[in-house]
Length: 297
Image 1 (cartoon, rainbow, N blue to C red):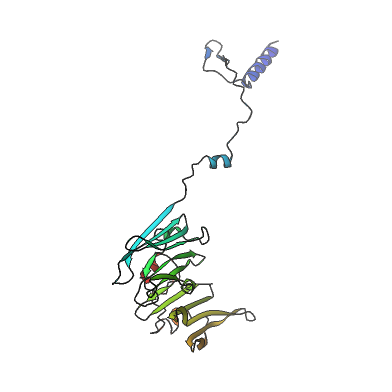
Image 2 (tube, rainbow, N blue to C red; image 1 turned 90 degrees about the vertical axis):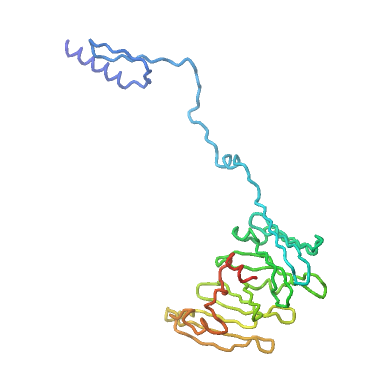
């Protein structure tokens, strides 16, 4: 009989310990039996909650963020096209990462040039949007200042190209120059009346160009190309091929062609400190950005 009572007590304790009901903050202790009796305070409010609460989707979360709107830019330059002329006003406008327009006003604030660019046609890096690459400078070296503005600044090598309007003194107007727009990373040399151009085009190839203004167009007067030639049969580089060309009788002709050891780098060639090419000079900038501004004035 005693064994039955003991077993019954164990069953009661086990069932009490496995109860799924949550205890309330009220309890009573019987010191004599050392048993704890739990009193559950039943809730008087039926919440009727679903098994799983809905969570906001990513789309609804994003749409809840207020749209700050486009970033608007405007940059203005005042300059004289010639020392004998009054000061003109040059205004560039942009939005987000796109150059949108160029306006030029004379001394009476009358518009003399208004150009709109196709939105989203050429994206530029945000760090260039503060000035949009606007420069009033003499690019054809005729003594009159012209105007250039950033066309595009992008690509793996961050190269830059500019749209250009040349001042026509005879007509007192600005005229677009399509040939200048083809010059990559231009650097002006007013003393020698040259424009230097270079840009990255691949890991195994690099080129340099010198432009001159001839008969109303910017043309390449000198070019230099370096190419690492790969020998597929030997499964290795055969050498560094160099081709130098110069303008003669209206056409570019090869003046030097040679193959150097594949371990040769640019600074190991004679062109690096050559009096004419001076590839060591910082004007040969291969990456666009504000550091190029010093070579556009």
